[in-house]
Amino acid sequence: MRKISFTLLFYCISCICIYAQSGSKYYDNAYQNIAEMLEGTQKNDFKKAVFLTENAFLDNEIEYEVFNQRVLFLADLSARFMMANALEYPEKDIAKVAKYGSVFKILTDTIKVALDSGNLAYHSPFGYDFNDFFGDTDWSKTFVTKLLATKTGNCHSLPYLYKILCDELGAEAHLALAPNHLYIKHHSKKTGWYNTELTSATFPIDAWLMVSGYISLEAVQNALYMDTIGTHRAVALCVVDLGQGYTKKFPENDGSFVLQCCELALQHFPNCVNALLLQGETLLSQYKKLVQTKGKDDPSTKAKFAQMNQVYKQIHSLGYRQMPKNMYANWLLDLKENKDKYVNKKVAVFKK
Image (cartoon, rainbow, N blue to C red; front, side, top):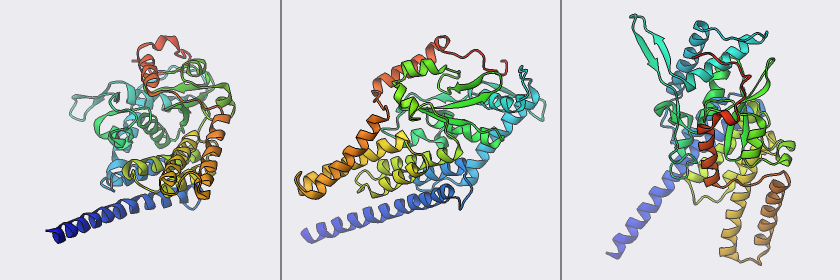
């Protein structure tokens, strides 16, 4: 009986090791491809980087062609809507602004679609999923693939999809960071720089974001928050997502792959707060393990503590202040229910 138990135990451990190796190879492949984009041996492709990051967590269960077809359908719908509807906008950059407006309309409003048969169909808007919006229980809740499948997402997947669709139409959208949050920044001749918020389907002003969103002046000055993120840095942000997903999938990992992701992201996106926070959390986890195995006074433990402490000092000096999750939830609710407090009324949109 004892012999059988050891055999069973060995079998279970072997299965776990095989599974870990299988799952890890998808992460290694995603990392290599995104690294090549950032280093210039592959073209920067935000859509592909997002797909690789999410599919690694999903054990490559989704075909890129299927993902791409769903994206192209929405891009085509946006283009058709733009052709069929006039945007009331007086400036010369109307072609670009119309692309922004059409993507915003497709994601946030109900659209009538004329079929070849002469009948009408309706494209419903994408909604916000308030259940587990941090992905604490299910990391895939933050995915664009989940958003495309269910038409509900969060402040990670919605702006990601928005940028992907703008990229498809040839009108780049800039991501921007706020505490626990992502949104879009655009520029037009009429309005200047303005914010697009998919959570509330509106355009909040900078002052409101700073006052209500735990954003310090130092964080803005150091480009920690509210700065425009172009495609290259957006791809670097995907590397941070890759590291976060790896931690979710393999919670007992030694931290080496995650730190590798953080270092690559920071190389191409200095002061990326998401990368710095993940780096600090990973070093803290490594430090705790060293305390348990070698004790606080061991030189390697002390060295790890110093390394971790340096990262947290850097984060604090850049102006980062933690926003509690319950306050973020209230902030999201305020975004949704009190739009008139903060909306930029100068932004051009297609009429309902």
